[in-house]
Image (tube, rainbow, N blue to C red):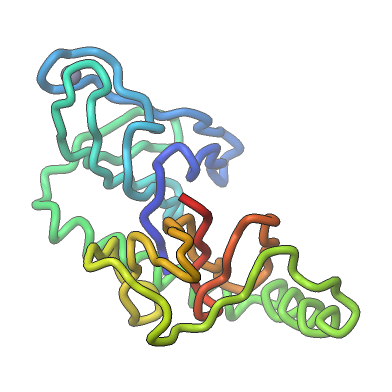
Length: 193
Ligand SMILES: [Zn+2]
């Protein structure tokens, strides 16, 4: 549903009122320097008229790690979230699921799906490589999360090449592989380390 990623990749986000949040940063609770979203790993999700942010930040100045939990309203005011992390994460996952379901009921989504499947025959072959899971593929014990009920391995080794996790296949399945990228099990995209 919603995949943790480097936080800056979730922005810009545009609210229904037209306002856009293009960047996000937070002061390090330890050294008070500004930490950019590119130094955070997590998610930012627009639900109705608010952006919910949950991420782990690592301060590039003092290496202090901290949790970022906040809500950005449609006037770009940032509000702290008092909920414990596990509860907040549950709320976000629930919200994301609900949003995707709502989206799928809409005609746009169905039309997009149809167009995607109609284009399948004529579409050029993906530029990246397809890789199926097998005993030949070594997978890291380090798990970054779950996607479609399966663990996301931080890295895999295939044919002696080490590949690191890049992103998951987006819902709706419309994406392009870069030349170097490897689509693993038709759901996770890796790239050479
Ligand atoms: Zn710091």
